[in-house]
Amino acid sequence: MADRKPFVGGNWKMNLHGDEAVALAEALAEQFTATDKVDVAVCPAFPYLAKVADALGSSDIKVGAQDFYIEPNGAYTGEVSLSMLKDCGVSVVLVGHSERRHVIGETDVLCNEKVHAALEAGMEVILCVGEKIEQREAGQTDAINTAQTAYGLAGVDAEQMSKVTIAYEPVWAIGTGKTATPEDAQNAHAAIRNFVRTGLYNNAVADGLRIQYGGSMKPANAPELIGQADIDGGLIGGAALKADDFCGILNAAL
Ligand code: PEP
Image (cartoon, rainbow, N blue to C red; front, side, top):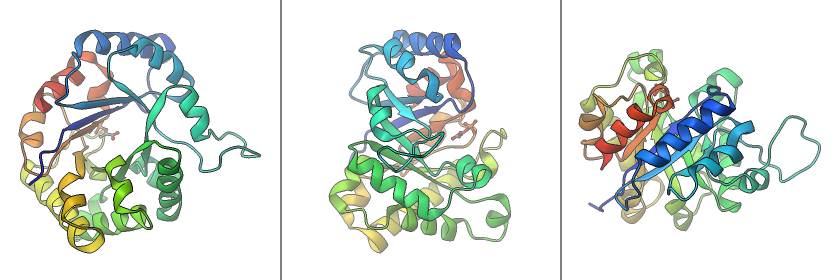
């Protein structure tokens, strides 16, 4: 089994106005000591990306974007391109977060177009997958995860996969305080990795692929979750809004 460096992302969603976002970034830059043992990114709201990038300074914490549009420029009112994000210091993008799939209505086809556009633009991609509660109760967890993984990665070359991370985020666990048990999360991650190994790519891609867990991860439950063989860090919502909580999770990943 390859030695995978954990990757912890903070998804600030539509939270934290300018001063709050900058203050959190400054606190993280101060508390997080650069290390080659974990990769870290935070994803603020669009208007504060550049300010947060400035506040993070030379801290090694990457700046991520929660969304983008697939076209490079043009008549797409309200949208933001990948090159605009690059101008703001962004090097990581989320694709297919459950709130974009299930609240905004993004399809698997659009997610796949976004993965390609982001990789072509040289961004790192975090592709989010995960089942809803009724799908879990119907025993469809692995089927949903593998289908979203297959659609999301369709046409992506093995060589491009070094820039892709998958976030397994059971929809019922996001922002609810309910967390998958470490065993359930491990089983879902192992099934995704196995599918990447035997259904999509090969041993090298599967062994190198980082799969984050997301869904009410906190400093208290992070050690056991991240301690599972196939869980390589986390994508964090609520607990990413406080420096102490986020750093507590980072410590668990170290
Ligand atoms: C998320 O938004 O990706 C997430 C996992 O949120 P939370 O940690 O609040 O469940």
